[in-house]
Structures are given as structure tokens and as C-alpha cells.
Amino acid sequence: MILSYLKKIQNSPKGFRIANTVFFFISGFGYSSWASRIPAIKAQLHLSEAQFGAILFALPVGLMVTMPFTGRLLNKYSSRYCMLIGAVLFNIVLALPGFSAFVWQLVIILFLFGSSRNILNLSINTQALEVQKLYPKSIMTTFHAVWSLAGFIGAGLGYVMVTQNIAPSYHLLGISVAMMVVTVWFYPLTILTEPLKEKKKLFSMPDKTLTKFAVICFVSMACENTMYDWSGIYFQNILHASAKWTTAAFVFFMTAVTLGRFFGDYAVSKYGIKQILFYSGIFISVGFLTCFLFPFISTTLLGYVFIGIGVSCVVPLVFSIAGKSKKLSNGSALTSISTIGYLGFLVVPPMVGFISELLSMKWAFLIMALLGVVMIFMVNKITAED
Image (cartoon, rainbow, N blue to C red):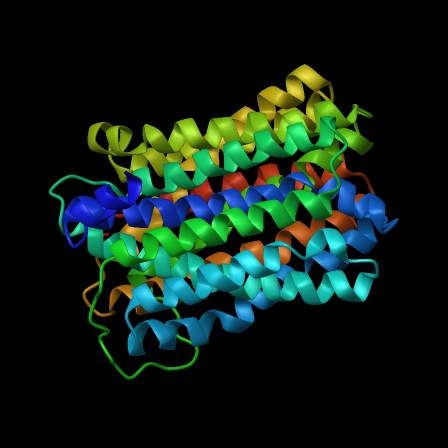
């Protein structure tokens, strides 16, 4: 039944959209499944905040190291093939963190996890820009909404796994196998695009027009990934909450991100991109500030909701703007703007661990609130020509 329907919609705009949506789901579901088990894996290896923060560097380092090579792949081959490679590698590595018995093993696994995630995410966004061309209305934030919905479902499943005392190893292995099956099923429906085959420098930075958006992307990615890595540990160490509340907190955050992205296209059409980005910065600042000033379960959950709303639409909107660049191809534009954006992913979340060790995680969250102010400042620099 399902296979016959997939064959029916193959090589159609609907088929392309469904397939790309599924690959966004794979990315979000897999990553949130890992994030939901971070506290357990940290405890499994008996790591402090500073130690775990250092280990977390491996994931974004893997991502950044492969960034320029992914850009070259997207220029040489169809994003369809790059997406398949990324999905297969991502699913394989996802199965491994729960089995790490030594720190060095987890470091290698996270490096490979970041590398595969970079290939998958850049290629699915490049595919999304190609599918967008087939539709008159904006659908970009909807793709990212599905990523968030998948993250919400993955976090919810993680909550069930924690409450049922299922080991991270079995949990992540099961997700890996299931997502590999989904990858094989839906790959034939993806859109086949012609690579531009342009000559591209190994490291390409965004042009002057895109730089301010790249900085905004930097702030959003820094804040979003901080929540993935540290939201549960904040509940453990600052609020001394139970394991159930620790996992539930991440679910609250992902719910806010998901709802924000599902309403993103409507909000942009009504208020415009600049207004959405401006209020995103406000929500981020208020959210982290709430966590700092009112360290209680209910108020911190509210802060997490504010942060989730704040980061929800920033990256898809920035990527959409990058795709409209007249100087660069879709793959090159996304790669160049992500070079700066992912620095936030690389530098900030691991630094939270070091700040927490020296001062307190509350003070680390206060610094994150200041990053939201940086976003507001950069949004005010956006002009009508941008």
C-alpha cells in the first residue's frame, strides 16, 4: 500500500516535497534522540561539566572540518546523492554513543556524528531550496518545523526510554535501524538536481550582504545547541530535579520550537522577516534571563519555552535568504553562511561547561541572554536592500 503510493507520486512536486520532509524528520529525530540521552551518557562515563564540555567540542569540530568539503561535494554532485551519503553515515554513527565505554571512544563517535550531520543537513537544505522553486508560497520554515516535530517526538520517546530504564545503547541502536529503513524507502522520491560545478574556494565566507545574517545565525545556533546539550543538565545541577523533569524540560523546549516553526511561514507573510528576527532575539534574551533570575522548575520551563520560540524560525529564514543570493549557488551560499553560523554551534555550547565549572551554569545562561541582545542589534542593521 505505502510502496504503491510512493511509486505513484515519484518524480512529482508532491513526491519531492514528501521525500525532503522525511529526510528533515530523520535528521531531527536522530539528533534529539541523542540529546535526550546526554545526561545518562555523561553519568555513564562519570564526567564533570567541564570534562563533558570539552568532549562536546568533538561534535562541532567534526561538523566544521567537513563544512568546506561538503560545499565542494554539493557543487560537484547532486544534493540528492550527498543527502543519501549523509543520511546513511548519520544513522550508522547514531547507534554508537551508548556503547562508548571510554572517553576517547565518545570523542571519536561525536566527531563522526558531527561530520555526518553536516553532510546531511546542508544537503537537505539545498534540496529544500530546489523544491521551494516548484511552489509559489514559502514552504521553507515548514521543512524545519518537521525537523522540530521530529525532535519533539525523539525527545518524547527519550522520556519514555528514561522512565522505563532502557539503556541508551539499545535505545539509540533501535532508532538507527529504523531510520536506515526509512532512508532506503524514501530516497527514490528525492529530486535529482544538476550540480553547478563551479570552482569554489575551500573556505568561502558570505558576502557583505549576507554577513549580518550569518551573525544572526551564529547567535541562534549557539543558543539552540546550548539547549540541546545543557537544558537537561541545568535541571539536574541547578534545580536538582528528578530524571523525569530533566527529560520533560527538553520536551517543553522542543514543543516551543516546533510550534514556532509551523507558524513561521504565516508570521513571515504577515509581519516580514525583519520583525520576526527582531522578536526572536527578544524571546531568546528573556528566556535565558528568566532561567537566571528565577531558578525554579515552573519558571525555568517558561524560560525554555521563550527560548524555543526565539530560535525556532531564525535558521530557516536565514537559509532562505542565503538561497536567494545572486552571486553563489544554493550549495555555496548555504555553506558560506553556515561557516559563520556553525561557529556558534562549535564554540558556545562547550564553553557553557567551562563557565559552569568556574562560576555556575546560571551565569552561563546569563551570558546566553546577552547573545540575544547581539541578535537584536544585528537585526536593527538590516536595511530594505537586504
